[in-house]
Image (tube, rainbow, N blue to C red; front, top):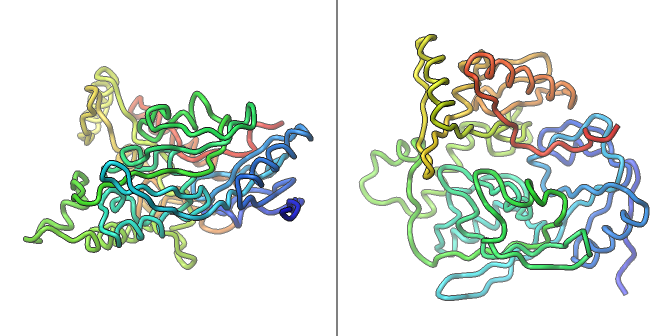
Length: 355
């Protein structure tokens, strides 16, 4: 017999997120096992309550009125290792903190995840957004995602091919949004190899180094670059009260990119871009934000743009979710008016759809 679930009432959610805004959860529970996760799902279903799964709280904006149902904080831990076809396998609990897991893989000589060092949050969130940074993304290393299907309460294992991974997307945040609760992720990692430095920040960092950097040096470089942009969460860093990058980099068809170039040229600007494998152009959202009149350090009272990273909307202290949403909309409208591009937000918005 395991202990009965401890359902709490009216639990403040803002302190459980990196942005630090939002109201209370009407009900709140922490699940440390698959059985507790299933029990929590049943509890919410029996009461006809909406359910939201909270991981590390690093990619969510909680509404000021909070969440009217059950917030399930995923706390399934553990990282069991194995081998398959010459690769190292790691079955990692959804509640396991991401960066300590990355550190372990780097320490054991695996390069696959080193460019994703320093990203906040938990392992369970990584397949949902197909978390990425510096030219790398988790989709290339995920073998299987173990999930609880909310439709029938069964636990199933989805191979990576079934997850429809794309830029900041998967079935978990698109066509099957809300259907699955991620319980664990299986990572398949090469025992040797070095990451490719496609990102200009990393190429610049190592440009004067003759010998190839070690994995430890690469990890330290990534962490140093992230710290310089206040993208490593620190209690004393005002610019780190954010969800990280708030907007996705838009991927434009040729006609839309031509329109952007035309509008930019009229202002004496040349938009940077990177070709995608399917012939489109990815444009840095940070460039669009800054050139639409929102430079680093810009602020409206309690919300603003990070002084170190143009894509981070930060809570400067005392901001509300409404402040954040209004500021987001102001930026989106300015970018669209000037450049005919609608930039889309990255975080998950919780509690806004009800009422």
